[in-house]
Length: 493
Image 1 (cartoon, rainbow, N blue to C red):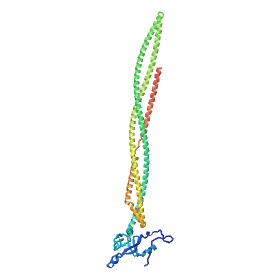
Image 2: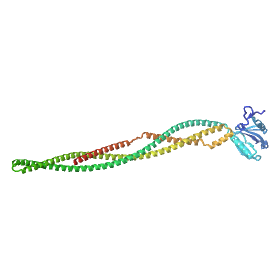
Image 3: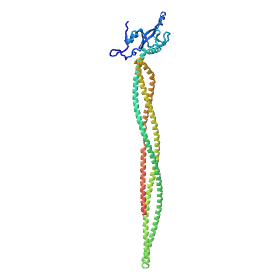
Image 4: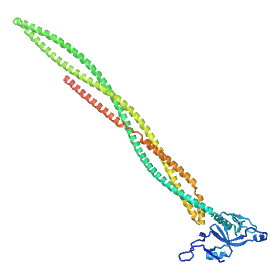
């Protein structure tokens, strides 16, 4: 039968053999080895079966082909291998082990369930035996069952990859929403920091207002005491003026009586003077003296009436001042009560502000901690998804790669983590992100239902009203004092 050769190298565009294309892309290994006959031996064949002979072996995609020794020259010359070998040994599912033989030190035994007996080959050195055992074992992985299993795994991995792509897109959408929520949370945190600064400023303002109210309270109490003292003095002056007025009335009554007596004496003296005009000239002198006394009495009576009118005017003014002081006393009492109420409100508000600031600081620290943890989970999730994609890509490349590249790919896959480990890390990261988003949603619901009450404007309004009333009372009191001083000065003049 004529030998038919299979081209084991590609050619360039000019038809010549390409020197850059390696033969291992079509044939995994070739070389001359020692072979021992195999198969069921009879008694006549025992001597011949123990004889070793050289053969040219080629490992081609899961099969071990062997030829006569001279086939190697044609193979090296043409770079083709004959498709009609002397024998074919299937390597898929075979067991390849080193073998001890008294004639050959570096023997290899190949056993297969479809072959009756074992195949024995041998190399010239231990290094060559290790290389042939390695390539034979790796070629033994190529079976129909493994091919079906690989196809099934590829389909499963494609489905998982598609599902992972969907999950990845869903996670990316969730992460995008989460990033927006985190951005809003950071904006809220910045706003809360601004509010905290404003609250601190409001706290200082409240403390200053409280100090002003305390000062105003002390001043109001001192003014209230001054008003009480002025009321006592006015009462004393009123009593003194009443006594003086009574004395003036008594003096006026006495002067009236003295006037009547003087008038009666004057009439009597005039009558006597008419009768005794001619007799006693001294009576004229007495009459002129009595007239002078009468004029002095009239002048004194007029002065007393003027004093009495001034005293009555002063009494009326003192009564008005007493009424104003009573009103001022009532206003000061109400103002003192309002100040005490405002101080109590300010104390309560100060305690509430400190408590709210502490709670806000603690909440902000907790939010920063949860945000940092969510960012770490997000980074882990992205790294795990990328590692899973790399693992799927590496497996696909390894399925279609040449044997030598496939060996390096297998070592790379061994260094990489398994699907289960990566899926566990992805599940843990997704669970952490889910808890974070649930906490953010719960805090947003609580913030939406929280009431906000500001009382600073009310306190400022009350303080302004109190200051206005105090200023008005002081102004009225100063006007009354100036008027009283003016009247006293007028009386003295």
